[in-house]
Image (cartoon, rainbow, N blue to C red; front, side, top):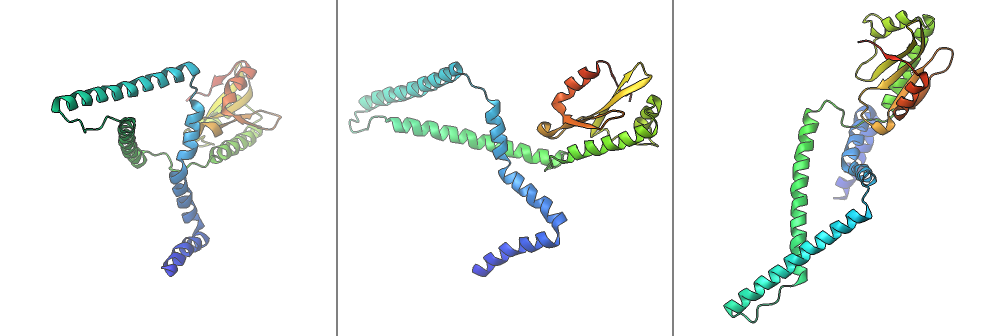
Length: 242
């Protein structure tokens, strides 16, 4: 038994050393599946904003429902005991009521977990989204695209027609539409103030970034929540045609 345990502990370690590109993604995926509910639960708890009034009304309604159920069952059992002449039949107890409600709650939770598990398995089987998302991937992708566009735009002296052709042409640099959307901020079509690269469908909204590419200055990488402020700072702009 000890030998089996040692083998089971050492085999994953050697696989990790020999095949890191294969083992590491699977290991990260397994950890994310097993413990991913913890950050999800924390996000749900942060999203909940119960007020005192709502909590008080909910607690009062639960107390009235449980108490009313208990007294109704007690009254019904007492009348049935008197009709059947069973004086030794015990009175209905509070712990029986609470246990009954506990069984109902646990049953509902088990049914909900089964439904959600089935839904998640079906979604994982049909969805094209990756099972595990590296929060740094999109940030690096946007940064790399911004650097590429910056170098190409500098080479064309920031000519508006050349930049639009660069972004939209199949022969030149093609922006991956599933990753980012380009927003060209120009002034009357004669000069370009900046190019804003925005993640179209970020898998992790909290870590999504946008890039601001401008002539004669370094690129800026900002949270995607700053998009409205960035667009407002340029006052006028238009989306690149598609």
